[in-house]
Image (cartoon, rainbow over all chains, first blue to last red; front, side, top):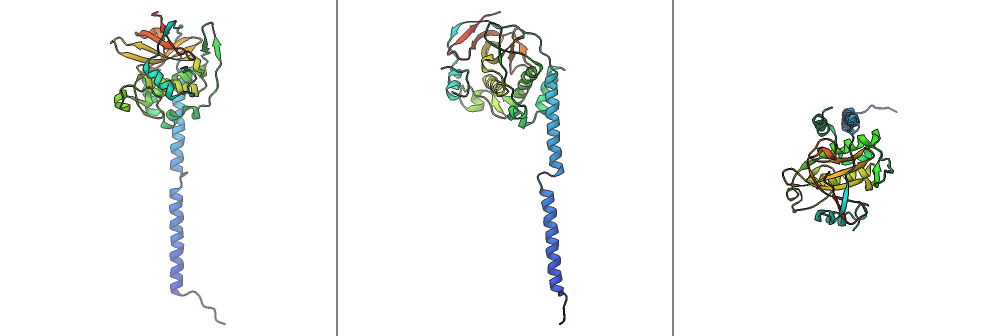
Length: 95
Length: 171
């Protein structure tokens, strides 16, 4: 029994398929959402938020005093409308 | 640190994710009311002070000032702004109120307050009652300020849980 190797056409077909797989793999790697470039962006954003939080924490407010309230007044019209729309989500509104 | 520098820092650096959902970035810790004889106040710990300053900076940076006619197409609409958007003084105040409640601040210590500016325009701010006095979160100022520092004529203030607002004493 004679065993023949792959024909030239078969070898060319195999090469094309391997080439396509390599290209597809490379494309998939480049398209990964957690590629190093994207992670770097996330880390930078986290660092930026930390810097902003540190800046806010560095502020010391001077002492104040208490405002004094007197007799009742009708609330502004915009407040009534807001309370109706946010009823149940804002415990401060008592209509 | 100069207030203007802080405001610029917040505007330039705070990402949309933080300004849109600060409660997700900073775990909420409920605060209890401290009663010094005149209702609910918040003990202004370093954490609470940083939250107060952070919310003031973040909301002032996230909202672009616009009249309600420009922003919503109606003459008057009080609404908190989710994420970035446009609004006027009452929208800034409500957004700050909602952010602070999201961070665990008691609603009873947060009071919408109306005033008249030196040029005669009506204005709305958020007053925050603390054990160190009342602070104003104002879209016209970079940082929270003591209420006595503002040259406003104070009109009235909500009292959460009460249907009526209350007149404010002048001093």
